[in-house]
Image 1 (tube, rainbow, N blue to C red):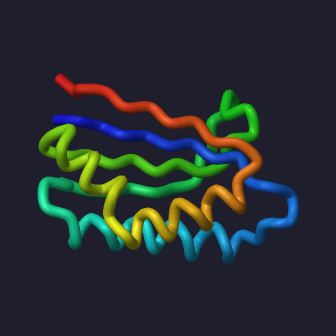
Image 2 (cartoon, rainbow, N blue to C red):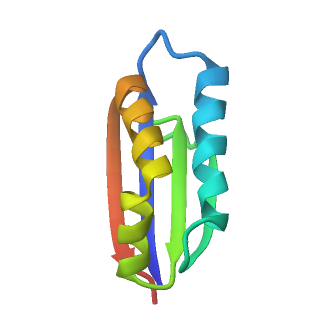
Length: 97
């Protein structure tokens, strides 16, 4: 199984509703892309989060499914929105055992 994780620190002018809407949009993609097992989004409550307040976790059957997720037109549209909203983001991809 392949796992993709993205962490976000938002610009100061971004509202909680804007964040919620974009994360709901990402979550919906799990039903539209073959090979995606699930997409989980949520708020980071770790004391060690260094300002990264939200996370997206994607579990997929293969790297090809992760690439299909990234290339999906709706993901690309939402990624553009996220790029405009984020102060900083971190991405992590790995093979889960």
